[in-house]
Image (cartoon, rainbow, N blue to C red; front, side):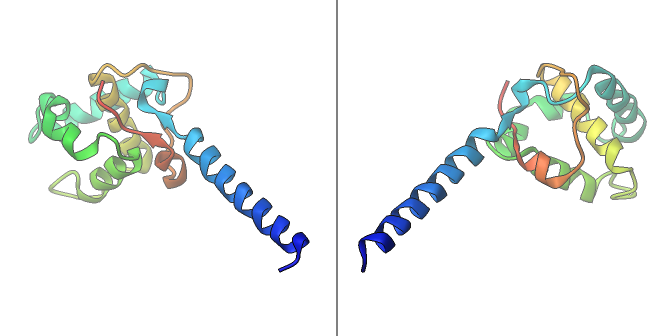
Length: 133
């Protein structure tokens, strides 16, 4: 193998490692203010009208909730809720409404609000890490 080819391979390997490092560094935490207070208010109203007949807010602040979602991308929570809720008509809400509900759950767990609504796209939600408060 020529010296030039070895140098190219080493450079490509370093670039790949750097890309992996940068990608993981870009991931945000729910502690960084990933929803707005207005979005959480909309989510609270939705929770009262669509969720409260089956779920108490405390369900979303206990250890079982964190066992299922802490350390995982927020997309996983969004995906489960949007695929299975409400139980009597799964998937019937708009994507924005599911995001509003998650914003309410984040507020319920005392995560700070920010300047932008929680997004609805998978790629962005995969870049937001759910954590324990």
